[in-house]
Amino acid sequence: MSQEQLNTTADKTETTTTAKTLRILIVDDSATIRRSAESMLASEGCEVFTAENGFEALSKITRHHPDLIFVDIMMPRLDGYQTCAIIKNNSEFRDTPVVMLTSKDGLFDMARGRVVGSDQYLTKPFTREELLGAVKRHTAI
Image (cartoon, rainbow, N blue to C red; front, top):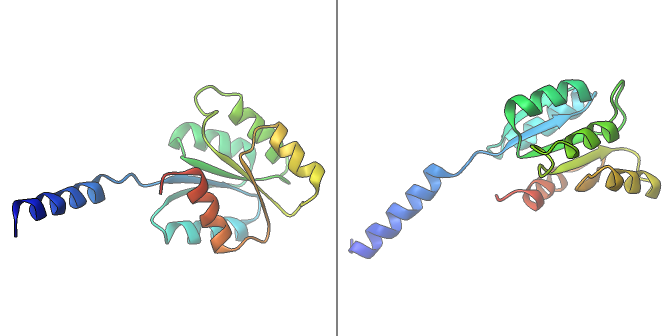
């Protein structure tokens, strides 16, 4: 093998071993949605954290510093709009992309999501391709 080929191989190995694992938080009061999304993302090598409400999500965001957050809109106590607004109003996390997950597909709902700072709106039920597409759109994978 030539020196150039050795260098190229070494560069590829270094890139592979230093690639950062994406940390993704799924916030949804439905255990089925959390498990489905977690399974889809984990199979792609992501480190996935889950929360079943906005309060739990805020704690996990502080602890794990996710690269991307998926938030359901319709949750008890602290809904997705409120959760997103709190995230986006925090200087440490405002640049973390937030994708709203919901079965509500009305124009008003999408606009409200934008007002609170969401980066994308994904309607349930979502496909594996839609979920992974959102990850690719908002992260460097």
